[in-house]
Length: 291
DNA sequence: ACCGCACCCTGAGCGC
DNA sequence: TGCGCTCAGGGTGCGG
Image (tube, rainbow, N blue to C red; front, top):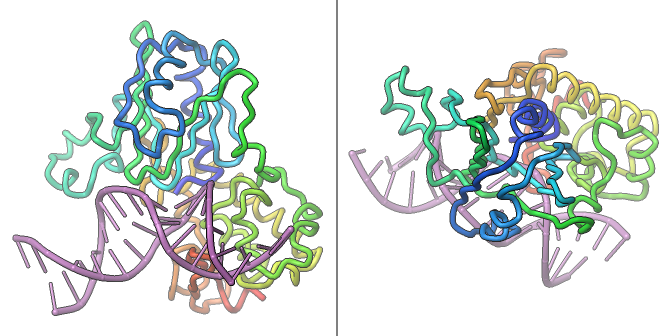
């Protein structure tokens, strides 16, 4: 599931293929709630225009478009942004994967889950957006048009300070993990890195946020930055559907300390990792290392 | 204001 | 072999 590190890795690898390129043609799938801007308007607003920059805010990617517009992209749960010609079995369903010979698996053909296909001039590779569950989003903003989704985001997880966190958690009875997942508090945190950061900080996910101390808030902020920077270095976590734009898998999933390690021994103390549902999400923690 | 929960979606994995 | 069930979760919106 793409969180800040996966979105940032995607941004870095896809930017050279988008920025400075003119969209000659945009193919889309049928209208669905994936399209905050209807496909027809998207095509009308993008075809013939050049992409000027690609930035990231929390888990959103923002492409600046020639003429002053902005294209907002969110990968949701299963969104994949990549170029034509990549080789990754993650782009195929298990049944199709099994039916193919290994040498055939290098070829990706746009399927019914491919919602955007950007084509460019002078033979540059296509850029594709595929999203099986359609929790991802695409929206075209006109010049100067405000975007409520972006404006309500809190401090980017890479920049969050302990003091920000301490301030945001006072008198809050919700679990600290629930607050870390609230994008208005810390933008970019998702289920994996929230669990990992809380482990490093030694704080149990279910602790009421208001009972987390100032020092622990410092540790959580530092841990968030640390796990995310390390994940970006290793290419992100390739759990379930995430794939980098060039088809490569990330490696951070191999460094997980608690996420999806239920009943496995803690690497630090040997006790079994526990799991419980917190705010509709599974939380994982070590009862020995976290208070 | 805050909190918990339902919902959108599809595929994998499991029990029978 | 296949059916039906459960689970995965980012973000939004609603009721209490």
